Structure formats: structure tokens, C-alpha cells
Image (cartoon, rainbow, N blue to C red; front, side, top):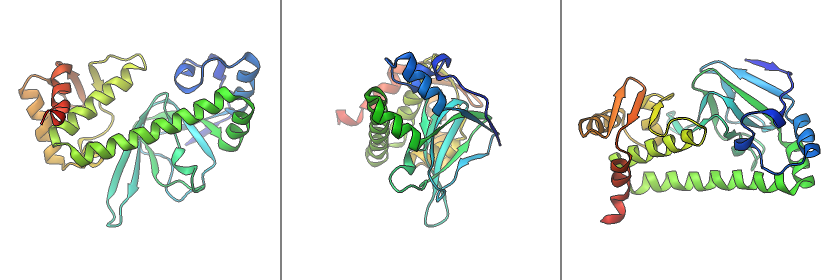
Amino acid sequence: MDISTVKVACSSCNLRELCLPMGLSPNELDKLDRVVATRRRLKRGDALFNAGEKFSSLYAVRSGFFKTAITTADGRDQVTGFQMTGEIIGLDGIVNDVHSCDAIALEDAEVCVMPFDQVEELSREFTTLQHHVHKIMSREIVRDHSVMLLLGSMRADERLAAFLLNLAQRLHARGFSHSELVLRMTREEIGSYLGMKLETVSRTFSRFVDEGIIEVRQRYVHIKDTDALKLIVNSTSCG
């Protein structure tokens, strides 16, 4: 892992629309630039932080893909989320000042380090930033709630369909195709996240392929029929 002190100018970063609130003045952006003064590079498999580690910073994913995971009481690795470019990691540490999960790079990645005490200080100064931090935290709560609903009430095909739609939508918001994606996580990791056995994940992928809904080549997935995936997800509410 390499922590470089190369200055990252938030004001000129191409991710600013995703990470930062709109409407900051040049002076406010300059102050934020000084807070986000370091970038950190990670190799595939490196830990950004581990459960139990003291919480000090939030991290904006500049490039690459991450998974967050906890170790269950019986020693299993339980995936709790996947984070991509433009998303914030580390919010789990705010409550108790220690991280409650591990954050692992699924490919070579780079993050902007945002020391939380300084972010808090600036938030009190700029209400725009404060609202944005609250919005990010709120979004994480909503996402966690959605996952709980997903695991609690959906069949295997509904879970995988919802996962693929969510991933495609998040990637599309970052300027990527809304129907083609490369899965950075393994099928085993997808199963861990969705509460499904590996065989069930593979069987469900195969079923979607057979029905002409998706095309799969190793980790490449082409969603050929978005409406069909949406129908699968919505079938719960129809009875």
C-alpha cells in the first residue's frame, strides 16, 4: 500500500459531482481541497481498514472496487456491501469510533482520504457540506434497509435480479453502460452478500441465460432484457 501526499484538487476532480455537494464557493472548495490532501493506493486484496481498527477517516473511492465484510461468530466471511468509484467508505466507524467491518480492494484501487474530524469541522462551517454528509449517511441507511428486505422476503431469482439491476444503475450513474458490466466480485462473494449458496447463484445465472435475459462470459454480464429482470423483482408484490 502506498500513501502519497500528492495534492488532489477536489475542485478539478472528475468525480466531484458524485462525491461533493454542488454549490460550494471557490473559497469553500479550496478549504475542502486542503482537507483531502492525500490519496491512498491499494493493490487487489489489500485492506483499506479492518474491523476493530480505530476510525479516523472517510474514504472516497477514486478508482477501483471494494467489498466490506464482517466475520460471523462461526468464523465465516459475510459480505455486507460492494463500493465503487464515487462512493464513500468508512461510515461504519462513526458510531463507536472503531470500524465494524473490513474493507477489501477487489482490484487495484485508489481512494481520497478525508480525516473525519476535519470533515466535521468544515461541515459546521458550510451547511451545504453538512447536508451532503447527512445525505450520504441517510443513503447508506436506506441501502442497508433495502438489503434486509431483499434477504428477508425475496426468492433467489428475485435477489439476483435486484442485485444486477442495482449494480447496473449505480454504474450507469458513473457514465458506464446501463446494460453491460464486468463483475469485480466472485459468485461466491455475491452469494455471501445475497444470502445464497454458491450453487444457487450459479444455477440462477444459468437460468437467466437460458431465458435470454442476460448473456454471461466469465465476469462479463450483458443485460439483454432489463424489463424481464424488473418483472422478476416485482413479482413479490404481485402475489
